[in-house]
Length: 295
Image (cartoon, helix red, strand yellow):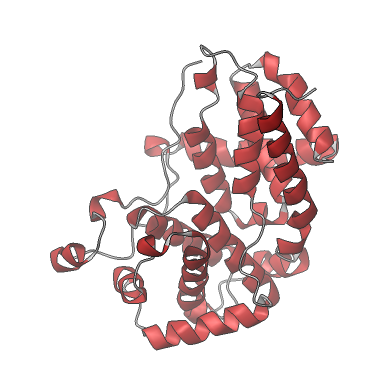
């Protein structure tokens, strides 16, 4: 039985979970389209998985630069992958497509006061297209997404699963299931196109299950199994995606400073540009370090 918190709160979380589970398939990128991207070569005819992953890392850098929320980043990745799965995009257009998807996600999730200017986004990214070009691309993206920007993301499931599970830990052991660490792990997975083929609920629960196993939080195994059953996730699917997540995070953690080897930032912020922007450019990084917790 799931007993994460006193009745009403748990009931509300389970109701939210049920709603997300009912909606998640509608907002997923089409698997056949993602496979075409994965199979593409770097010939300049179609965006490849490698180029897509680099673009997502750049969007993560923008998310951190402007101090935006993690769910904004997750939604931006979802929009980008839905579009790439529908359209044959040439590499020369990827920057405009990616930034347009990012801006749509920002406007859909962030408070108005936190939405950066389109000119700032383009300037910091050092792209050559104009605001008008980006607005035209936004319209194209919206049309291909049937004007539905919002979608259910793995981040939303991760939040709910964490809230439902965390309450089963004692105060002393609660620090071992750190949401910031789980969040960083999800961001690392978002930077690999393969994980966009997983149902958001499965990806989130895979990350959660691996963390529980690694920290040997045996008291959470029963509630984890309850959530798996409630989410209608098969043992086979969970095992399959847990293996891929583990491989991804192992590669991530083996890199210097707990970060993967990625290309250097493709933009350099001048002092003048930095003064014009709201947030400090010292915050720019490609991928977050996964915070360590005690064993």
